[in-house]
Length: 293
Image (tube, rainbow, N blue to C red; front, side):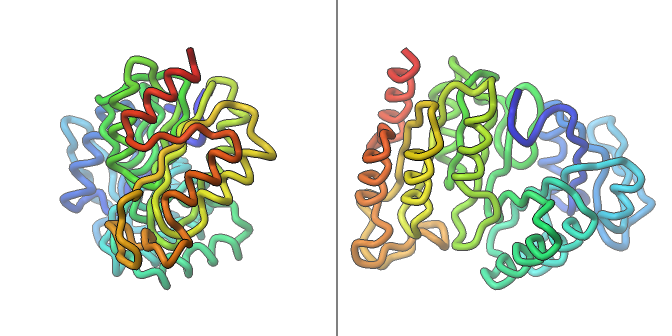
């Protein structure tokens, strides 16, 4: 099994006719993803040839869903259009929306997340500013390279795209059930806890890697959740042990204020919950191997 994404998902790509959307749609198709069309306002009715696969383009998500039965969208639109794109997907009752776009104003992210909650929270939003989600050997929705790992029984949830890739590669011999990049912005949809909950319930996931980073309290909240609700082994890594205080590091949410949000504080909270925490990605991979014997 896997969480949230399998070969049965039907995927629309919002922004498929743009450079990035087209490039990554080709990669998603190569990974076996069931991409059924794209959405670009004003270009509806056209077809796009992607390596011999001809896909229709729709003016709206609602039209695409009605025509194809899509249950997933991947958002590649520019930041200034991202809020409207996500709201459109939510209004079309798409169950899974993966927002790849970087640089979305926090106000806009908060607005489309609030809109989703106001509509009953039926849509799972992953991101923004994230690499997406992949269930290796089954489907890939986003920009995660599909050829760096194999299918297996490890679940991974991460704030960082590049650390996701590194750990997928280092543990490619063991393989993964699903890898989820939740993004590092101050306001995101899906959280570590959401993934931990479903990995715990997934019979084909034996252990979980949790990757965090400085800033905020997401890792501390995840630690409290693990202590109370997760029986499977969890191994963690927190990026930013050497980050200077008060300086934003890469992600908009990765900023330390005093003792709040430091890598050390997060690592201590996770370790107190029984999570073995590595000080480097390679050490983290080694801890996971030790946990699985």
